[in-house]
Image (cartoon, rainbow, N blue to C red; front, side, top):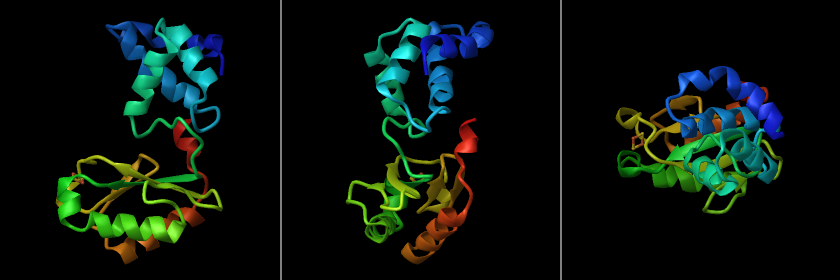
Length: 166
Ligand code: FES
């Protein structure tokens, strides 16, 4: 994506943001719609369109679970690893899903490209710990390792959700 495309998206909404830097997030979300993740070119385009450096834009992008700086699988599974979920078995869920999907203990994308497993901080569902969020959209819980695997199987079989960003 180039800076002109990003400008065309954010110019009509500029007046809704008191500070220019607040436009970075909607610009990044828009830029991500093209490929499902953000490339160096996208970060530079967002920087040029918003008036910030690509490094600053990247620092913003790296903070958010829903913005991806590398290609992801068709479905993104975020496993909450914050305290409430940890106390109720998030470790076991995480380990089981990583092993099952054949990714490292740090997460990653399954060989078939269908599932990306990543850690997440508190998803606001502590009363349903341990919980999982699918595609940064749908959060469910509580899970056992077995029910989490069934949930991932259902996601794997579902249509591509990248529409969410479009
Ligand atoms: S700690 Fe997991 S949802 Fe809050």
